[in-house]
Amino acid sequence: MGDDVMGIHCNQPDCTRFGHAENCTDIEPRSRVSAARIFTVLLFLISSTTLSIAETVRVATFNVSLGRRGPGVLLKAIMSGKDEQVLAVAAIIRRVRPDILLLNEFDADFTNLALDAFRNELDGGENAISYPYFYAPIGNEGVPSRLDLDGDGAPDEWADAFGFGRFPGSEGMALLSRFPIDLQAARSFSSLKWRNIPDAVLPMNTDGSPFLPEKSTTVFRLSSKSHWDVPVVLPNGQRINILATHPTPPVFDGVENLNGLRNDAEIGFWVSYLDGAAFIDDVGRQAAFSGKDFVLLGDLNNDPNDGEGSKRSIHTLVTHPLVNDPMQASSGAVVASVRYGGANATHAGNPAQDTVEWDADIGNMRVDYALPSASLTLEGSGVFWPAPDEPDGDMIAEGRSGASNHRMVWVDVEID
Image (cartoon, one colour):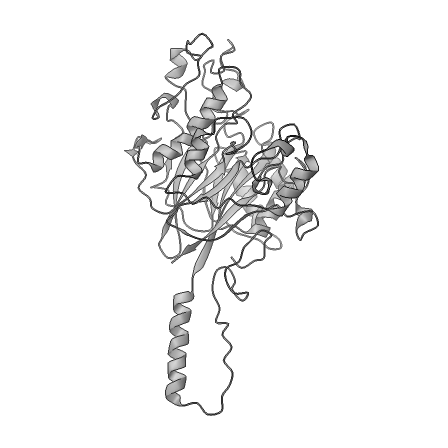
């Protein structure tokens, strides 16, 4: 990608655009050069240019915080063409221009009306960008369990859904792509039971008894949203598997630590998957990960160094031998950390790597990830969080104002 987006570290000549190298070699004219010499120089230029041409694909994740209080509310907001948050989110996407983009916290519906409307919004106006391909099955968010999963004695409340959400599809996930998606090979693991993952640790009461009754344990699903393995077919035929996820926050529970344990288990799923564990997907196929090149995307709701939640799985994931963690950073995150103060002053992590702006008593953290496989050549990476006095700084509002309190995180990977 040749656009000068804040945070890009460009490793290509200034004359490149969208990853295509142009022939920028200036050859001074000479009055007397033999035909053979000209032919030799031309052959060299052609061969060296051919070898140097490489295309990059930008892959990004963005928690857009477009969860509204009821079904159809987001669709109405998008269709109005006047919703300030929707317009701000769309402006950032048009600015960064990812080729493949995971949206977190986007209200889904069973016929994808809201997603279609949002794709049309992106495809219109100045700097339009088109995403003709998408993958957005509704996961566990807001899907009723008919049980008392939160253990408060009142079954079938909205808090007892298989995943947090006010209605099915509430604050769900959607994968957008400029390139074809192999839908037949795509895998979703929404139905996978928590107790069926390797070394499952379920919540316990202080007296050592199970927090969840047996009838709940047998149906309790691992994913609070979903876990997806979606192959995207690039123009050269190469495939990149997008591993998409959005684990529950490791908070809002009690001494049983249900959400903390679930967050760790949801992240740990990817460690097991990359290690070769075979899981049964939502259509009954049991298979291990068979891809080579991948990018893991999502709001993992866990910082490797700060905040609540177990650090076991997140540390294992970012240091996995198949993963290349770019540790994306931005100047805007540093400014925000100083501005908010509070817990930020005591955090152990590098504030430049923060991806979300939370209240001062919690502090900003790194929770959004775009992790390419070690098999891919990384050409650039970043977090779209320019400082207020930098170009595009006006596109980022403070806190939960503007587009989202989360920032888009991206990687540029080279394809042959």
